[in-house]
Image 1: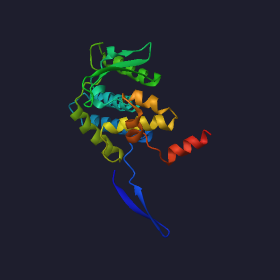
Image 2: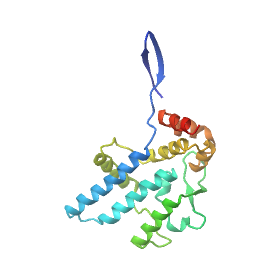
Image 3: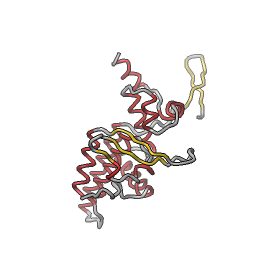
Image 4: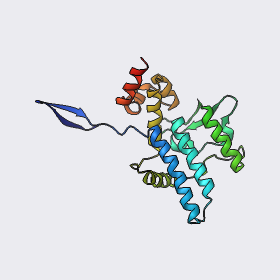
Length: 210
C-alpha cells in the first residue's frame, strides 16, 4: 500500500492512503435501485431481452454476494440443490488459486436471502439442477458497470461485494474467525489485513454499543 505525507500544524507525518474498502450496504441498495431503473427504461424502449429475468437475477446476485462474501466464480456455480432450506445453509466448491485442490465449504444463510432465492425459484421455475445465476462473469461485470453508472457510483468490481461483506461483519461486531470462515480463508491474517479495516463509522458503532 502506498503512503503520503500529511501536514498537521508544524508536523509532517506519513500516513497510509485509505484503501478501497468495498461496497457498503447503502451502495448495495443504490445498485439494486439502479437495476429497477434499467429495467423500467428497457421496457419502455422495448429491448428484445428477458428484462424481468435479468433484473431479478442481477438484484438477487447483488444481494447474494454482499450477504455471503462468496467469490463471484463460486457464486455463479451455485445450483438450487446446493442450498439446504431447512438447515439454512449452502455448500459449494471453493476454487482458490492459492490452494492446490478445490475444497467443499458450507456457510449459513440469512432468512432474508433464503426468501429471495425461493421467490426467484418460484418466479422462474428453477429445477434443483439449475444454476441460480445463469450468467457469465464478464456479462455481470458489464451489467455491474452499467448499474454503477446509473446509480452515480464509481465503477465497482464484483469482488468488492466480498470486501463489503467482511466490513459488514466487522461493523456488526462478529469475531474475525467468523468472517475468516465465511470467506473460506485458512487463517485470520488475510481477513484482517486485507478485508476488515476499521473506519470512523465502524469505530462509532462500537462506541455506541459500549
